[in-house]
Each structure stands twice: as C-alpha cells, then as structure tokens.
Amino acid sequence: MAGKEHFEKLQALIDLEREAEKAENLRELRKFPVAQREARGKTVSALIVDGVEGGMGGMTMITLSRPPRSGEELTPFHAMNAGDNVLLTFSPGNLPGSVEGTLYKVDDHRVTVALNSAGPEEEIRGHCQIDLLGSDATYQRMRKALVTVAESKRSRVSTLREIFLGEQEPERVKVPKVIWFNRNLNEYQQTAVKNSLAAQDVALVHGPPGTGKTTVLVEIIRQHVARGERVLATAPSNIAVDNILEKLIGTGLRVTRLGHPARTLEALRHGNLAAQIEDDPAYEEVKELDAYRERLIHRKSRHGRGIQQLGYEERQLREREVGKLWRQARDLEADIARHIVAGANVVLATHAGMSKRYVKGEFDLVVLDEASQASEPLSWVPLTIARKAIFAGDSNQLPPTIYSKEAAEGGLTVTLFDRLKEILPASAQTLLRVQYRMHEDIMRFPSQEFYEGKLIADDSVAKHVAAELPGVAPSDLTSRPVTFVDTAGAGFDEVWNDMLESRENKGEAELAVKLLYELLGSGLKPKDVAILTPYTAQAKLLKTLAHENGLEIGSVDGFQGREKEAVILSLVRSSEAGQIGFLSDMRRLNVAITRARRCLIVVGDSATIGRHPVYARFVARADELDSHRSAYEWIGS
Ligand SMILES: Nc1ncnc2c1ncn2[C@@H]1O[C@H](COP(=O)(O)OP(=O)(O)OP(=O)(O)O)[C@@H](O)[C@H]1O
Ligand SMILES: [Mg+2]
Image (tube, rainbow, N blue to C red; front, side):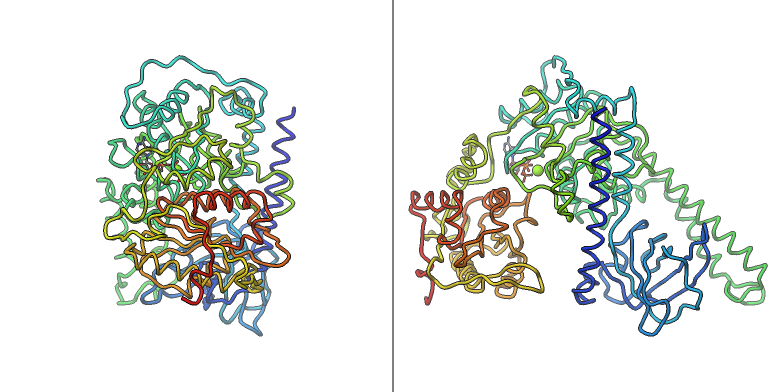
C-alpha cells in the first residue's frame, strides 16, 4: 500500500528533524552566553541538587531546584516540559561533569531529571545547570499520530487517509439555504463557507494575506455548531490559536482553550481551560483540599516539631496523607476539566498541545488555521480525532521552519495543505479574493507575482494612505502607498555577522531609521510602524539604533500573520557578487510586502537585488508608480 510507505517516510523525516534540532541546540549552547540562553528559557543555572535516587528500570533520577527570585517575571522552567531532552552540567571539578537526561517532572522552581546514561556512582555535589536540547513531546505526539493513521482500518481516520493520499474522492452533499451569522461576508467568503458545509470529509480555504481566512473559519465553526456539531479549532502556533479564540469570544458559543495559560494572550486568559476550572463552582472543594494539605504540612506534632523533625514512622504517615490529599485535589481538578471540555461547543489548542488527558472521543469538525505553516506529521495530530477537516492557509507564505536539511529535501517542508491543493477537486477548494488590508498599489505587485492577479482590494482600503490617519501630515512618504529607496552606489555594503550567523548592513540600517523618523515627524505613531528585515542580525542592529515606545522591529518570518499601517523593509543585500541568498525565497518577499496597510517603504540596492527577475520587476513597478527614490536624497541631510 502506497500509504504505508508515505507514513514510514514521514516517520523517518521527523526522526532526522529531531536529531537536527538537538544538534542545533547543542551548537547554540556552545556559542551563546548563559544569560542570553537563560532569558529565552533554554538554560537554568545555579541549581541546587535536592536529591538523587534510583527510578524505574534502574534509571537515576536527580531532583534540582532554584529558589524563587524577587522580581522574576517568568519562573525558571517556564519553557521546559516533561519529556524534553536536557543536558546537565555540574560546576567545574565536580562529577559527573556533564550528562544528558530527560525531564521527568517539571514544577515552577524544581525539576526531576531521569539520566539517560547509567547514573554517577559518586555523590553529586556543587551547582548544576540545565540546558534544553529539544522538546520531545511534540515528536512523540507526531510519531503516535502517524502510527494511528497508517494502521487504522474502516474508521473515519482511514477514510481521511485514503482521501488525503488521493486514493478516494471526497464526498459532498447539497446544502440547504444558509442563514448567516456574519452578514458582512463577501461572495468568495460565502462560497468558502458553503463548500465547507457541503464537504463531508475535507475542504480547503485558500486566502492571500488579509482576505479573511480566520473570519471565514469562525463562520464555518458557528454554522457547524448550529447544526449540533462539536468542533476542534487548531493552528501550529499559540498566537494563531489566540487569533481564532479572539474572534470566537463574544459569539455566545461555549469555548475552551487548552494549553498553558502563560502562552495565551493576557486579554484572552478567561477563555483558557485553567481559568475556567478555577471559576467552576466545584473548584471550591479543590481549594479546601489544598488548604487542608498545607495545614497538615505545617502542623507541628504533639511535641512541637515540624514534619521534617518527626520520627520515621510518624513522618511516613504524614507524608502519605499529604500525598493522598494532593492526588485527590488533582483528580478532582481533572474531573472538572473533562466536564468543561465535554460541554464545550468549540475546543481550541495548538496541534502539538492537543492533550488526550481531557479530550475524549472524536470531533465532528476539526478546523486547521495557518495550515501552510504546519508540517504534515504535525497536522496529523489533530486529524486523528477528526470526522471532517477544513484547512485554511496560503501556500505563497512561509512554510514551517525545518532544522534538518536532509529532512527538508526529503519532503518535510511540503505541507499537507500543499499536497491537498494538488489532490482535491476544485469543488473542495475556494480562493478568497477580496483583501481588507492593503492599498491597491501595495497589493498589485504581490497579486500579480503570486496570485495570478486575482486579488481585489476592498473599497474600504483600496485608496487609504497614511496621510489620512488622524494627526498625520501629508508628505512624499505619507501620501504615497509605495516608496522604493534605492541605495545603489551609496557604498552601503552588507557584512556577515559571525556571532549571529546572519547578515547586516549598517548604512542601510541608518537610512531606514532616518526614514522612520521622517514618518514619525509627519505624525505617525510608533505603534503604527514596523521596521522589518529578512536578517536577524540587521533586526538586532536596527534595535540598537531606534528606541521608540510601541515601535516594532523584527524579522519578516516573525511577523507573518500581522500587519501595520506603515512598514519599512530593509533588504540588506548589497555586494559586488550580487548574491541574494535568503531573499530569493519569494514567499518571504510576499509576506514582507503584504504586512503594510497604507505605507510600504522598501530600502534596498537595485544593483544587487535587481539581478533577480522578480525584484527587477518590483523596481520597474516602482518606476511606473513614480515611487523610485535614490538614497542620496537622504544621505547627508
Ligand atoms: N467580509 C469582510 N468585511 C469586512 N472586513 C472583513 C471581512 N472579512 C475580513 N475582514 C477583516 O479583514 C481583516 C483580516 O481578516 P482575517 O484576520 O480573518 O484574515 P486572514 O486571511 O486570516 O489574515 P492572515 O493572512 O493575516 O491570517 C480583519 O480585520 C477582518 O475583520
Ligand atoms: Mg488568519
């Protein structure tokens, strides 16, 4: 069966990817200072060894802790989870030096690690540091999902598998007249909703930037819930899941979002399962159990001694009681959670954050947003519990990040969405065409290059410019939707930053900042502007040059799915050789340009980028719009 081979190949690819991620983390570990890694949650230093004991199967388990620090915003282990691979390093001169392990239990300030190699014989002393080598939980879920899909027979999953491999046609039914929840949907959006209702197995919503993919998914969800169905809404990233949640809150549906509350936007926390558990009336009993347990821990014995000073037997008894109370409280909490999840019309989670602990049974519908950002194995995680799936995505935006070159070349960058685009009949696919973000001059170039010229700007945005924003004065930059500032001949050369393994261009960065202050001088607010660049080193350099409250400076990749009134894009590349490397991925250019609503300023060297035909057309287009300026207009002024 072709399917078997396909899933075996995917298994092999994710194994390669897991190894590559681990190797990359090790490399970073050797390269970056501890403080930098610690800030990102990849390292926790100054840990004290609380205890070492034998665990299951002769494993050595070591427990480490670090007391809370005042003013600490995030707890030390905030980015680590049970199942992650870690490296333990003991202070110099202490055994066992460094050793790999797996996180076994993770609390706010304490972890237990199972050592991978046989444990150290010597007594462990001194301080210790933990470094994250890679999260294994996601790989385990992907692996499990792939096995489930490959092996299932005569079930919904096996039907979806056959359709997704092109071995079977998806089914459709006739849809009765739809009564719209969102009356503002345009004709393409309405067609997408109707196609999804007609589909019995799967449908795709293709949407260029700003065309309302998430808006359409929300209508699809509401229509299905109105028909008595239960829906799971997922996306690869937390921010994308929050985007759906934000649009669902206020619809009157019962929704619950799984995942760590710390990874949900503050304003949406009340939609998180953890917050909902605490709001449940039954939670009172959990609180009572916890309070009783606390009292028991601190209660002195008849002889005025604390639990630590009790005799062996009494202490054992007390600890057993404390443990029992703890488990009772957690069991009760889990019951409440299952009850909330079972009663929800819509459950939301990231693909990898789908916990089987609370989620039972199948969903009538699974919607997958940002589908072009999720690898195929990752998409299968929610699909194993789907009766029907609706995907929304855009193959012309950036694909998932893959560490392993071999895995990428082997096909891991091809998403399920990409494959389905080729396999599924036209009736199961809809292209959204009206966008609600960009001035038509900003839109025209990406539309022609990437969407066969099919994009339409809604009247509400087609002519909007920055100069129309309150308090903004008209100027050459603010009255013009697109400006290309050409650095050709200005002597701004790119350089390679070895530490960051990325490129930067100081002259260009300074020019970009000059343009920024010109925009701000015209009255634009910093929060309405972003400076974007494909290169992390350039982003870092820009951050040292411009400090404005609310201004965002970042990489193009990190800005996918977002928008700003004005965007300054710094392309960086400028050299005799004329290489453009990274910039030649047109999906990156597409994402970069389509972040701007009213004002797009591109800074780059036409002599370098113009060697690529697409960039050459961009420059030609700027000429046509009379938008091609020379950097000399700003240099020395
Ligand atoms: N029919 C419509 N009428 C008016 N505004 C709309 C309509 N559809 C979508 N919008 C608005 O357009 C903006 C983009 O919508 P949405 O976030 O759903 O797009 P998207 O395709 O998911 O974007 P992205 O590519 O960034 O994920 C939102 O502000 C949304 O409210
Ligand atoms: Mg969206």
